Image (spheres, helix red, strand yellow):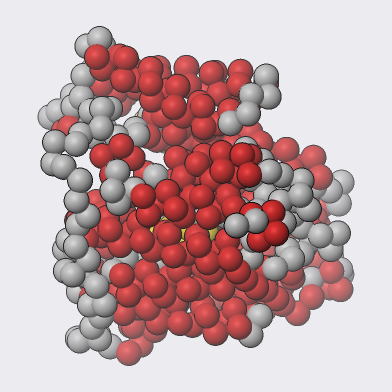
Length: 460
């Protein structure tokens, strides 16, 4: 099989080794979803093991579609935030069954396919101005770094809203169980060491630096556990760093959740609101991720458009639809794909590698579930550094361009949402340009988007 012909490796100035390394890196930074998604959806009453299988298979299907339809190094999986909305808002909050929530995800996926066929999502992507596109990339970089700092517990909640980790401050947020240096403390230290190690590898241009950073940090953690410095504490979420094969190798059945849709007991208007909420967040999370990661990889053309975007958006839509059938929440393009791009990934061979690893994870789940968040956190922080570079391309001299870009950038980490950052950026961009008499810069699509965002804040 000629991989160069299929993925146009030479044309994209890359090679098989680079692409595979990038694909492994993307997978390593995303692998946490295999542990987190089942935990969240099982809170809604879904079978834990079945959700694990659905998560891995849905990620494989969506990412494979990205490789084949668009030849881009972007990976897909059930999205964070959307899974929490599914479990905690729709099921536990509104009182609907998880079968109804799955039906809403299925309908959303089918609508997505139609929007992709008729180029609606593509039109939205192309309508966003250049400076705002760059701002999205920077905002996502800060958002990713913030997630990394949180995952490592370097940043915790405190009297100042957020504060640097301390055992005393961390324990104030807990109940009766208290953290010690041998669980929470040592993992924070290991994460900081991991950032320094990854930074050194990046500075020395070591091939696969982000992946090596993850593996070295994990390896140091294993050494600490074997030496008794790190002591697992399951009550606080600090588990053994050693893969556990005691249960053997088996793939949990999909039967408890496969195609279990239901419209029972749901009012049509409420159902429409649920579907719209899924749809809205996914559209702008995906567009934001595509803008940010594609911008980082210099994939946008001179007009700020992404070639073959229709295939990328269709992969997202098919992934969501397939995920609903399998029994998981909305599948979306993962912002962690930026880690693979930072490793040099430029084609669908990167995403194909990531997709295959998701499939293999079904057989080797103990290994992937053992990778701790403090080991992947340095990768996310360094990726944030990479993506921050786009800030130099934003025109801050023009206030009608610079202020909306700034608002978009700070909104993403502060509101903990890519889609909210885009919403704030679009509203402020349209408002500033209309009021200052620069209506031509906005265009009809941007005005419609701004109105829709405002209506969303009023009615949802």
